[in-house]
Length: 528
Ligand SMILES: Cc1cc2nc3c(=O)[nH]c(=O)nc-3n(C[C@H](O)[C@H](O)[C@H](O)COP(=O)(O)OP(=O)(O)OC[C@H]3O[C@@H](n4cnc5c(N)ncnc54)[C@H](O)[C@@H]3O)c2cc1C
Ligand code: SF4
Image 1 (cartoon, protein in one colour):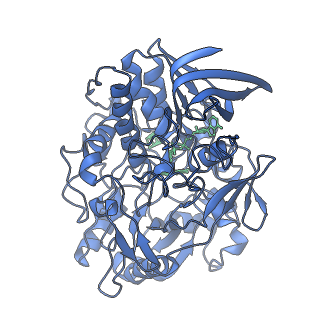
Image 2 (cartoon, rainbow, N blue to C red):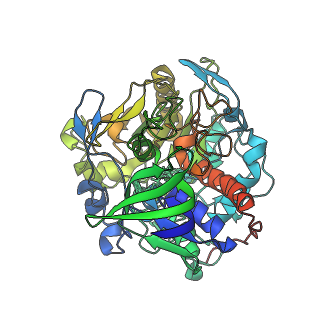
Image 3 (spheres, helix red, strand yellow):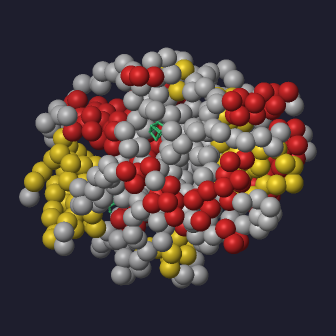
């Protein structure tokens, strides 16, 4: 059996980032990824292929709490969900690390403070080429360094929106974007600023995803090996149940086994819980690392709403994700609890509506789909959903995954929607037109839209109420770590990927120390 210093299972925001961080140590590292490389092909940028045919949604079947089967919005590729993500790379707010009172209850404190993770946010912003402008977002947490790249400029309609918001007394800001765009030198910019970014793979590898900026740089080192199409189905332990000794892989129908001194799980929140639960043994009868009964629980994925407003003027924007609004993040004059974040989502294109069952969108008859797309200004509203132990991933004897979820904080979500709706008249938009848009996942089952999945293996100081310790090591095992979004005790209301990346770097430093490897040189960032 091949033996490694570190085995990392899953190559997304958590696993891919960790691989890059550990690679210079010279330690023997194995990456196991159930998916393959995402093919580079013209379809990457074809709206019909991506949004109607769901070409890059990986086949899988999960079940909801009622036992209804559904196709989850998952992407099993090298780079994981980041291959398709919108690359809005936000830090959580400083307050998100403390206890926050919401309409439906408490968002719990994290066992680390914002200051503990701040240096890793800075490093993650550098590794992932984040473009932004400090000092504009009123809720922005303190940062030890400027953004490594200037904010992506607004196109004219979004600049107008920003101006109108400011005129109405709001504080819009340039959103943090992970794209390798060099506006000062377009002929040499990797990113061409196109309209097929959010929810699409990037054909020219200019999106800051975990394949391009995590896995590929790691693989430049001879000590790092990647096995694709390698689905990990089980983790076996020593007789005492104190350490993972074998990682069991299914590859092309054949079983393979690998040994690692350190084993890191980063399969995404639902699949990480699944792997741990289906690795139950005599020593771990409720699932590996699950003496606390917390594995699988507290699943969160944001109370999100994608909507489009109709601009009086045409909206010719290509890359629309440049603006954010956090004025209601912690509440508003008429609502004392946090409401959440408003940001832009990828620009609507007419073929997308075909993927969105247009017959059900109740659009006014005089508006053709093409005309709607031309006038659409598209927003993404995100409210924090609260950790609820009954919202959970469960696995049955056959290995079927159930996601049982009941919405929390619905009132705050509704209030945020009404805030946006009430503003439209001041923003050059039809005030009575705000339409739902099933961004990312065309489905009747909301839980299938699991883009922002988190929770299921919360970290904490108390082994009775958390699965992982503060370094994201399983309380009950000496060599098992988790570095994807599973560790989140709460999810905040901004996008989760940068926090997963920063935490992977934080855990990475701990692992380097554990292995006696030198600390990693910080690499300068540059957009080429
Ligand atoms: C369409 C879309 C848009 C998004 N937009 C944004 C955004 O703008 N900003 C943001 O911050 N976040 C965004 N997200 C969310 C973001 O991509 C995720 O939060 C992030 O990728 C989670 O990282 P992770 O490491 O937890 O999991 P993932 O990135 O999903 O990685 C998990 C990896 O594990 C692999 N895997 C799973 N099971 C196994 C197994 N048994 N064996 C081996 N490998 C396995 C998977 O194939 C995958 O590669 C978006 C997501 C989607 C889908
Ligand atoms: S906007 Fe840039 S990063 Fe995004 S898909 Fe287009 S070229 Fe790639």
